[in-house]
Image (cartoon, rainbow, N blue to C red; front, side):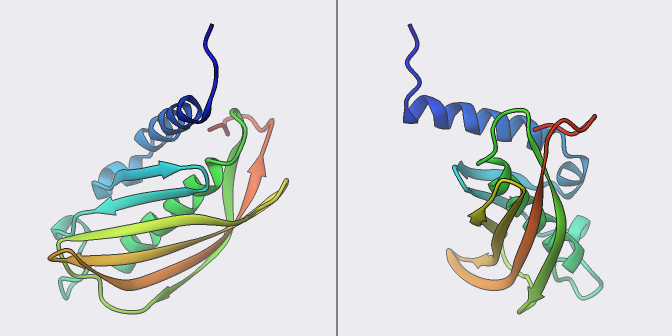
Length: 153
């Protein structure tokens, strides 16, 4: 008999989020990676390079926005029952500084999970030599999707 406990539940959650993330074409194009998954929190990392830079050599705001929105979305999805999905209904991003460094890390977390709407926030850091600098933060509202064709985990 398998007893579902906290460690088994987190393994199932990580597998679910990892499988969904792997099917995201944009994250693959950006070469973004899933770095951490827990209930209500997800981290995505992105290595700066020519594939995500703008004309000054900084990581493009579009790439920052994409990983921030995705981290918020997966943080929200991590609290949903299997088979339900989430879609972002709106987000606002504040770009605080140019993203330069060895790594860009988006830390998404749920602020309030609701039955229909979930509020999430993502802090985005540029990492240089182990030091983190906050370069952006995003707030998002996500809608729970259930029973809609084509929308799942």
